[in-house]
Length: 147
Image (cartoon, rainbow, N blue to C red; front, side):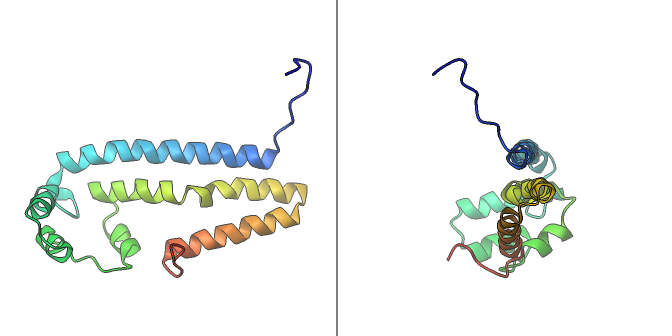
């Protein structure tokens, strides 16, 4: 490669998306590292007591019995309700880390959208908004992107 060759300049929208995605990923990883320590240090403050949950799992109980032995009845599709009811519990903090990491693309697209708007790139703004709406609908449980 020629040393004098100029490298292509990266578009501002892509730099903003990359920086936001990087920061969100690092934050969710740190939360995911700290949360298990809190869960094990404060087992009584959790939604699911890890001692009871692991005992039920190792005893070979069915998922319904595991949830029952843990003292919480999970309802299919009830993740957000369970999350907001227990956000300050140690395992609620762990759920926040997972939700933040999984929704990172949505949050990282916001600064990219503003960069597209500043340059008046309507087509890319439309694609960005479409993808953000799909992610938001999937997070809400209204659509299932897995099939």
